[in-house]
Amino acid sequence: MQAPMASPRLPGNPMLARYLRNMYRGGFWKAIGFHYILVILLVAGGWHIAMSGPVAHPEIIIKLAGVYCFLIGSLIIPLIAPILFPLLSDTDQAGGVIPIEPVRMFDARLLAVILLSAAALFPLLPLFLILGPSRGSVSLLLEIMPFFQGMLTTGWVYLLMEMTGQASDVPAGIARRLALIAGFVFLHVVLVGLLAQLSFVTLQQTWFLKLIIDLNPFSQLFILMEGPEKSRMIVNSDFQNLMDYRSYLLLVSGLVLFAAMTIYRAYVQGRSAVM
Image (tube, rainbow, N blue to C red):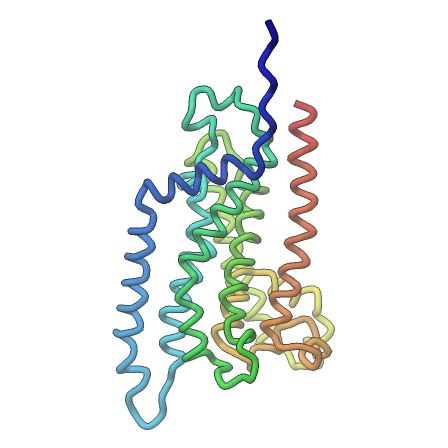
C-alpha cells in the first residue's frame, strides 16, 4: 500500500476567497446598494442649495457626498474589519489547526477591506469628474485620483489599526481603533489650525509637520475637498511646481504605506516563525 500523494498547494489565498464568498452570501451588496442610495439622496438634497443663485457652489455637494464616502470607505470599514472579516479561529473551532500563516491571514483581510472600501468609494469617480474642485483639468487621471487616494488611505488606516489595535477580544480592539481615529482628528485640528496661522515662508521650515499632515487621513480628505488652494500644506513649494497636489498625496502615501507594510509583514512572519 502506498500513501496518497500530497496535493499541491493551491494558488492564491484561500482566506481571501472565503471572505469574498462570505461578503456575497452575507448580503454585503445590499449594504453597498443602500450606501449608494444615501449618496444619491445627499446629492439630490444639496443640489438646489448648491446650484441655485447667481453663483453655483458645487463644492457643497462635494463636501456632502464626498466626505461621507471617504468616512465610510476609508475609516468605518477598517474600523469594523474585525467584525466583518473575523479570524478563522474565531469562526471555526478547527481554525487553529488549519495551516494558514498569519501573514497570509493579514493579507486576506487587508485585500478584503480594500475591495469593500473600493465599492464604498466608487461614487467618488463621477462626483469628482463632474463637480470636482479642479474640474476642467486636461488630465482625466487627475480628476479620478481621489478614488485611488481613498483606497490607499484605507490600506494605510487599516495597517495602523492592525499595528495599534491588537487586543484579546473584539470590543477592546474596536476601542483601540476608535482611539486611533480620535488621534487622527486631534492631529488634524491642531496641526492644520497651527499651519493656517503661519506665513508661507515659515511654512517651508515646518516640512516635518506638513509630512504628518499629508499622511493624516482627515488632512488628506481636507486637502482633496478644498482643492488647489490648500496645496500650501504639502511638504514644500518644489513639489507644488513639479506635480499636482493629488499626485503628490498619492505618491507620498504609497511610499510610506509600502515601507510600513513591508516592515510589518516581516514582523508578523518572524513572530509566527518563533511561535
